[in-house]
Each structure stands twice: as structure tokens, then as C-alpha cells.
Image 1: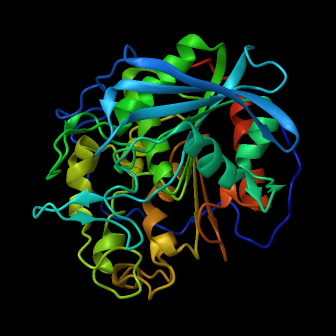
Image 2: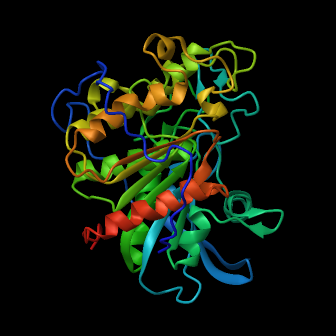
Length: 395
């Protein structure tokens, strides 16, 4: 594990001692709610579809590619996942790094019109992801710049001998679907993102020798990585750690959409609404359930969570005027306002391993960029977890 420290004028770990907690929705009870049930899932439909070798930075890795016949994608195909084995010991015991890639979020409105980013459409992330897609478009684009290996969180874990599990994103649901009917989808079906993701982890942990298990997500995947950690926690399994780059589920997160609805420079379509997202993601979208990060931490959630965000991230609409609610509450940027309650909740938890890292002059998903501050902070986060001698999650 890297131990290099970088001294920076960038604000590293956010500490706001003068801030008081704002009123946010409270959970119905301390941990669970009447609506929450453990995520119903199966590994029986998982089959090996392809094997191969890939070479990254002159090192060759064995890969296994699986299709999960139990879960349909939103429009066409099935859910898939890729296992990248350690280079020097592909069948050996290793920690597991579960990676949720990004892709924003989308939904069908009540006219069955798809609502998403302006540059996307209903097929962008509602279909099966192929082996080539996960190897080249997902891993390749996050590991290299013009053929040069990035020094980022993914490359560091691969070089350190982790086994990498790369999940597909096939219901455009923040990876949160638990099997509810896909709202307004003209093709029918269910929203299965969390079911498929957890079944992939269950399968890999059962079939590959696994020690510690971390979930790491970027952009929309940052929400999914958090959701999976919460779902396992509520089932009694504590993952080793969660790295949520671009944020976990926050109580007022969808207000970022509503504030800028119709703005010509917003990244979303003019008619995109936060409520449509909440309806699609089901149990996690009902904030009375208390499954958002502020509530979970307040109620003792102790799976270590590192939340990363940049103050110049256009996906928080940081390129537009500051949210009116943020200004009223005395904030000069959207990111500090959105994370304010989570920060206070963490401060109130004794000896917490949770961290919030908000970076000045930083854009989208710094943990997969050449950003020393973000990536060294992930290393430190892992080191702090390991110093507590944590249990093996699926032992």
C-alpha cells in the first residue's frame, strides 16, 4: 500500500466545526424501515461467457467474463460482469475491488419519453455490456491517457495485486434497482441494478479466494457503490470500505436537478426531474426509509465510507450560478451545501472511519484521474481501515 503523503493547499478532509445540522428527513426507526427488505437475488443464472488475456502497461492479466441470465437489461440483453485477476497469481487469494462505472441516470416519464443527459438516449445504459466494452471502453478509458497509464485508484489496486470486479450498468438506475417494475418502460421489465451487482459480488466471493472487499464507484457508480454497502450492512455483512466518488445518496441530492430544470446550460434534458429518478430507484428513493447517507451515519452505520467531490464538477452544476437554497443557507457553492449534513453526522460519530473529501478547483471523478490528492486519500483511507484489523466480509 502506498504511504506517500502529498502536502497541498487544496482543502483535504473537510471539517466544519461551526456548522450545525440542518433539518433533514428522519428515518422511521433506527436501522430498517417497514418498506425495506433484504435484496432478493440469485447467482444460479450466472454463466461463464468468455475468457481472455489483456495487457495493461506491459503486464498481462487473465480475465473472466460472465453473463447473468437471471436479470434482463432495461431494453435488450442481460447483466454482465468482468473479473480481472491478479497478474502474478490469477487463481490465488486476493482482496476484491468492486468497481461501479458511471453513466449518469435516466428514467421514462409518464408519456414514456426517456429523460437523461442531453448527450444520452434510452439505449445508452439500458442494454447489455459486452466483454469488449468492459475491457476497452470502461477499464481502458479509465486506466490510460493516450496510451500512458494513469496513476489513479484503479491502476494502484491492480498493481498491488487486487482482484478487480467490473460491473455492468444496464438499467440506468444508479445501480439501485431491487426488482420493482420499471416505471413507464414501454418494453416492460424490472429495475435490477442492485440485485445484479450484489449477485455478482456474491458469486465472485464464493468462487474466487477473497479477503477484503471494497466497493468503489465513480459518478453514478458512486451512488451504486454506496447503495451496495448499505444493503450488505442491513443484511449483516460489513464490506471493508466504500469509496464513493461523486457522492453517495444524499437527502437533498435530487434538488440539484430541480433547481436547474430547463436551464440551457444544464447537462440534463430540459424536462428532467428529480422525482422521476426517485420513483425509479424504489426503496432507496423513498427518503422516509432513511437509507440516505446522513441518516445511515446518524444511526450508527459503520462500514467505512469515503465520499469524494470536486467543487468544479459540472454534474453538480458547478458551472452555473449557485443554488438558491445554498445561498440562503450561507454557502457559496453547491457541493459544500449538499454534503453539509453528512459532514456534521460524521463529526458526531466517535472515532469514525468515514471521511468526506471536497476538493477545490477539481472536476468530475478525481479518483480515476491523475489527481494525487484524491488518490493518495484513497490509499490513506484503506490504510486506516486495515489498521483496525477488520474482519473478512465473506469468510
